[in-house]
Length: 219
Ligand SMILES: C[C@]12CC[C@@H]3c4cc(O)c(O)cc4CC[C@H]3[C@@H]1CC[C@@H]2O
Ligand SMILES: [Ca+2]
Ligand SMILES: [Mg+2]
Ligand SMILES: [Mg+2]
Image (cartoon, rainbow, N blue to C red; front, side, top):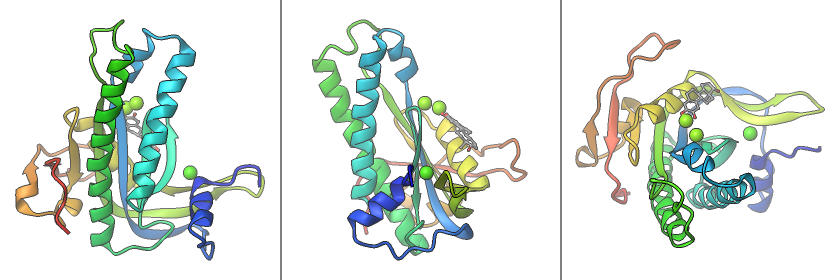
């Protein structure tokens, strides 16, 4: 197949290809991250340099997602959609642990990238001195599997849970991780601070939100 989805490449690397990828509803945890300031930065740099920076960022973040047992579903510009519990089944608790550890490690990895970019003068033409990370994490059901046709298919997750994770990200204070109650239920009290409820268009119930402090999570 011309487009082998990243998840299959990832599984081939770990020797596990006994996967049933037909779409099925499943409880998963969705991590949606985005950068604040990348578009502004791209206005001050030539496009080839912007592409280099974006690739450097996506490479670093992909290493972090894989290193914490997640699946990279897709990139949308500088936004990253990662899944926990698909295609590899994981307990809800394990999904949350991996997603939170990923978000914290992504945060640390971007801090290192910002330092490197500052040293390279990337921000010299702009009042920005760094780009910031926003992340939303939600646990809920989605239909996961290969979507498309025999000619072109893509492994992804479909459903409101993906939208909720993305909206949590957009509502997060830059530099923070915002999670839903379903995720907060698995975290220690001292790790979270209550955020304001999120009204989501297209989703009828209000989503309670919790900001996660950037300490390493206790197992
Ligand atoms: C996940 C989604 C594509 C990314 C969309 C997004 C992107 C982005 O960079 C943001 O800052 C916020 C959002 C919110 C809606 C998201 C959409 C809901 C269904 C669709 O598949
Ligand atoms: Ca995909
Ligand atoms: Mg965005
Ligand atoms: Mg973006």
